Length: 360
Length: 99
Image (cartoon, rainbow over all chains, first blue to last red; front, side, top):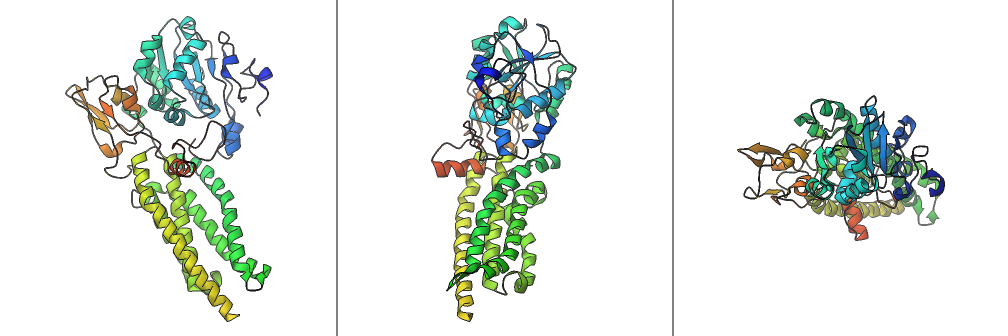
């Protein structure tokens, strides 16, 4: 995906996904913003590796045939972001100034400061923007505001910063209204669909880590005084693994999707509640699922409810309405609760194994 | 949707506020309104501590302990001893689902 800087940086538009030093992009030859890449846009919802390298090289780009009076839109060097921007301004003539955000979207990069005051000033200067356009107005995505001090941009470069809408799709309406964003355009939404598209990136990474749970489960179930036996390892493990997978699905998909409908404001509590309700029915078939042992049943349920809660808590970072003080507060009670749940589950497992071996 | 009650650390200094309206413009949660020529916070529980208002207030009228409201980032910071940032790190060493 990433080719050497020697070829790709000369023609950033031919190979927009390459990650080369933006300084080598010729400042006076803005190319067209890359065409929308639907396949890549889907892949970055599924693969971490793909997503992290899904970039547009920083610099000044064109959409249509902008003149020196056309608006300048500033955005991040994440390809999915650029594609959304391009989609919204197709048919218009605009300049697009892409900042070097290391392939990260506007909101996250602003939080980190890479979509920041210093980078914007540097990019205005390296692209010689003041010579390209006659006006002195930049339109920034509103969600870039945590990284940009607008008054400092004006002081240093002479460019006035206007914060546009939160969503690229509202840019035409923003421009049509004389560069004014309505309150609706400024507010971040978090629809059912927004939550749905985020869940694969919660579920698949969690699934990879779940392999350790499967391994641990097989070892514990197979462990006999004579060594680890294959038959009980498989026969007794698989119902528990299925229940465990269900808990991963509850914590990483069901709880995030149903977020506003689950009681409590705390994500850890939402996950624990969803886990408890959706895992409890397994207690009706302890004979079939948990080798007929109450100890094993409660050990696994405790562990998996904690797992569902933990995964739901991890969704805090994907939402646009949590804050760091709140997450810290949640962690102060959730982490000890998880440790306690794991401790109690371990004791119950030991009792189960002792009983099992006593029977042999 | 609102998060936990009474945890946000946002503070607005009415004395320092000049009523420029920049905070109303940058807040992604609509937590500010203009009232009698000055900014006012409508509901503190709306604040996500992103820091946009503080960063863009040229008069230092806003204070907030900003950072990522992301448990994954805070767990990673606790384990590695680093700073709590969005896990999609600059090195391409991805560990978070936030971006």
